[in-house]
Length: 408
Image 1 (spheres, one colour):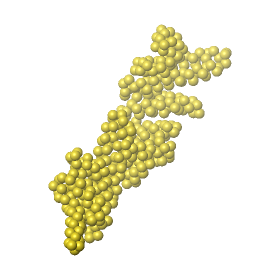
Image 2: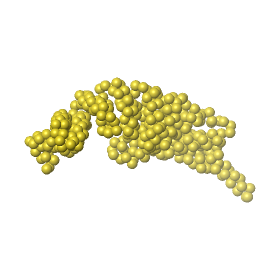
Image 3: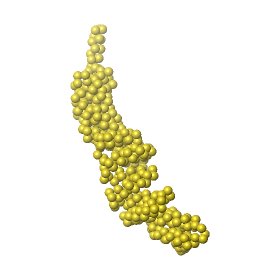
Image 4: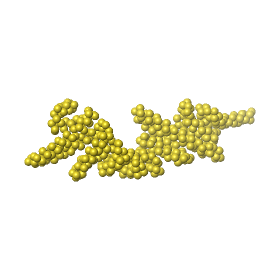
């Protein structure tokens, strides 16, 4: 009786062991027949059972099943597990660790580029979601999606490097990593990846703009200038890199360097009104710089006027250019009147000459400020400037109108 009982128990234990191993076979068959939901149930049981958890085959099939779940075009299967790609990656790593006889290693290695590609497309999908959230005004959701974008691209890059991929694939992935890092506001990673792209001379001018501006935002103007300059060296005809370097120079008060670049920019694109406006504002700064000689300031005044006029000629209703053109005349008139007011009371003729010159400048400013007011009737700075001019040169009817607009 005891012997019979022991025999029954032995058979029962054997059947249980066979049943558990049969889960691996069932998972394989369900997977082969495209039934990913049932394949997942079977392989999940096999990966936690003591009889099959140590088998390389179990984890090999697990990797295959989860990879196909992640890549499935059917939402019902794709939604079986949101972490399917990570689980596939972990399963393949476990299979390689257990595969002492190398039965599955070669096939797993052949599947690694597919896994890397799946991570890459996963990142692309998150990028699309991020853009949609951003467009809808949900910046929090957008950033979360961009962080996931970066993570997926990084995982793809890790797999490509570890298991082999074409250099062009790795470089392209690195580029997308740098872009995703910027979108995710991970400046340190963005700088790291962009620097690597610069070092391998990745053929994209935008990387120099991104890197220069990231350093600029950090207050590291030395590195900012370094990468803008390197970008210009490698892409001497690229206007965007040049304009970003100009913005750096203007921000730190390097007017001479900015003007040099602006003059070059004007030769690269003689139809861009923004460039000529920037040239005008740069010369305008020199006009206002009292440390400069009168000769230098007078020359800068003429060049500023020419530049503003070119901007106006190139762009209809360019408010800023019209306003600045009027303002430069007004400011010069103010300097002359200040000089006149400091004269001795007996210097009547000289005072009269200076006042007439100042009034002439104010009159010259009027067409531009009036046009600026026409373009933007609500701008109070323009209205206040017009009020002062109308008062100075005794245009009382116009003064009355502008006072009414100002609510006075």
